[in-house]
Length: 396
Ligand code: JHZ
Image (cartoon, rainbow, N blue to C red; front, side):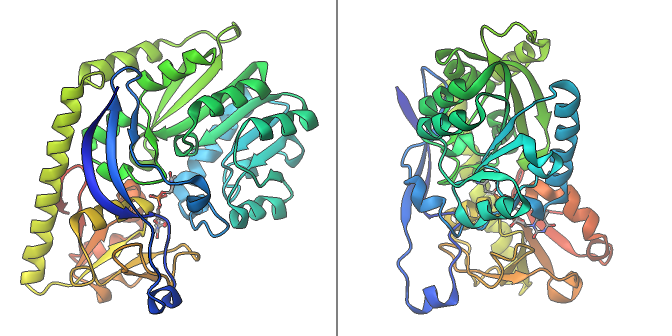
């Protein structure tokens, strides 16, 4: 049974940045009701009203993983460890985006899967075999007919974006070699709950996994987690190392049991925990609105930093518009010069002169706080302030 625990209201598609022409034409934006539920059997957390994949991941998808040095470093480190520990002959990435991960591997050994045409063309241009398709059994069979089995499959922040998880794992099982390894990473539900980062919920994040829910799912498909790694990326993620259950080459690491214990101790298996989270989110909204209102009453100028997909959940849920935040700075060329979904806040090209621009900066890319604070030492030194909503709304 799926029990609803959170209602974040009507929301536009998080990555649908609008052009000036769209605004002038008064383009009608697609809205969906962002409600989140907990499956009491599988313990899986999901949004309740999903949006068709083709509407979300089209040829103009703006997200580029390479916009963050933190992500590039994380991919590089993982690639060293994969080469050392698994030595794959054929490696496939599902959701290869702009090649930030695969660029660390020999082109002859790699297969990329990327349904967003514009970004998929980037890896094609780099010389990587790229299938511009959604991941499913049809594609799995097609790729298998060309490369035979794959011995390492990697997928970061992608599987949680696909509604039919049974089909996902079935088609992975189909192409994964007997001793092959599947590595996936996605935001961790435990971290999301600890940090109160309710902005992890938006149309693309159909699921927020816990080890608890993922293990339940994998079991149905004769797969199991044999190792995990805690990552700081994307606000706290888990990297899961998965094998076929009849693959005895890898032993199950103790940290798997430990993580399961943590999750249960925290209460991720109990609906009451979800209701507590709901209250936390509602309080977070009140507090954030209060901070903004007080600053605006003092005529302070506020801009945003990092026009993330996530922050659109916060802005639309808290109804923060251009009366409060003047614009958002971002480095991504495919977002710059456009307007944020729902709120229509302008995305301005990032420039280093922060101190001359504003009194306060709302940190949309809070997950890159460390990287950004390092970059913005000068602004901070001059007394520049940031506003964040994670782990609770405050001024830093
Ligand atoms: P970032 C996207 O989410 C969408 P988003 C997707 N659904 C997902 O799961 C994750 O990625 C993986 C900018 N920036 O990575 C760049 C600066 O301007 O948190 C990006 O627009 N300056 C696939 O969008 C944004 O912030 C900087 O110094 O929530 C970061 O977006 C840095 C570091 C970033 O993902």
